[in-house]
Length: 108
Image (cartoon, rainbow, N blue to C red; front, side):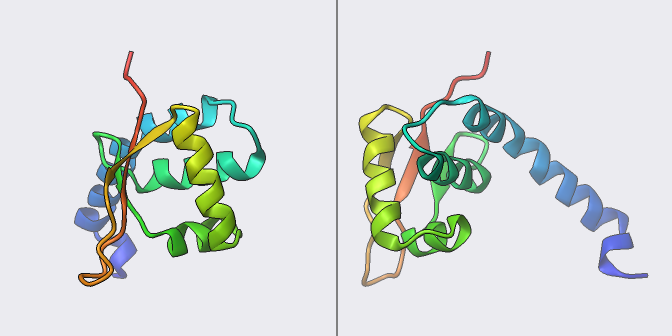
């Protein structure tokens, strides 16, 4: 039996996916200024918890969206300016912790 066949692992995986569906569904429904901004928004939605809080580094976002870190930084600024997200926590380079971003979505 592989790990994927194990009911507890599969069940835990399904539970995590269920928690992320509202954020990803919301992100997909948004109209952003560019496809690259939407890619960053979607990557943040995938990383977000049930409250919309995403702790992910700009390097990880760059890798996930196939963009440079400079491009990701520009996209994050535009997404914040356009009201799609807010920065909820500053990065701490000494502790190697990423910025926190909170998606501005509401459940209806």
